[in-house]
Image (cartoon, rainbow, N blue to C red; front, side, top):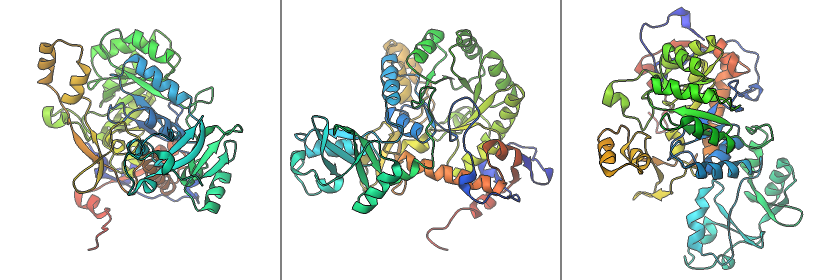
Length: 478
């Protein structure tokens, strides 16, 4: 990465402050770009879902891993819940999506409550494990909410053998003018579902899989208590990567926790953070981190900078920390502050191996929250920061009432924010398409066929706020 004409400003920069300068290139297609990462995480696209309770769950983990990213489960989950989630994700198909399943005697209200847990927006009605109907929002329109699904389910749905290629599934849907195919095993048992777009995505993305060909998933652990024992239990439960996580990563308790986990030699990559300086990066790597998480205060749910004045503009933090990590054979993740695909591309150009995304993914079908509708008819989900009063209350539930009250006085972060579902991109896969399309195009402009080449070849300029505003589209006209 270099700055235009070698002019690097004497002050720190965030993503809005910089822009790419196009290079001469011989790349003719964005699909010539390899988005796989080199940090040991096994991701084939540079996306990590943050370990936020309002964002990270089993539906998110399954869906993101199928497209090549990885999801980090929150540190506050009980070990039994982590083990159950990991087992679920590891058992998922690499191509077919997991269907929402109900029996024929379930009610329409049951179906409506569940169908938007998945972006495909359908419920498969089964008897004895075999599909007998499909219910969508359209089939439930103007129907009594207590009606049974056997009376409203469409029975002329498209079925395709589970072993069929995605291209075959797509062609079957095209011929039937339908959007959803039900995949069945040879014995007629339900195997999964696949949409037209899902079939196309399988030829664009490669799943993030472990050595046994199962979807990857990560888990977080804090720095309090018996950290080593919990880390070992998480790996035994099947976690492919561990994230040692605390808001202020450059502290003695973090270094001690990292060292304790490293001595166990668990055989999985170890990420830790957060820091924003080269000294913090070097100390975490020396203590045992393979990956350093960079970012203090840039997240949408974080009030740290306004409360404390602590933090650093994210682009400069990533650039400095990635350079320090590279000197030691380690890598960094850029954690927080991305609002557009350009921000992801800039973080990668600055040297990040992966980019962590939280609130941006909160407003999707796959996030754990319930889908709600505001008075204007807009769909949304609630999000909250992991240092907020809401998160602290959940984390300290076993403390005494007095200790909970004391800790509650010092929360940071937003406890409730409505994350609207974008009507054009309501699913996390839609956002992944959006992000990866932008990053691939950035690489073609930079003349880079890989993320490593993007970092090496990127030429960046510094712009004013007016320069950033000029690049925004004007959908409503002049």
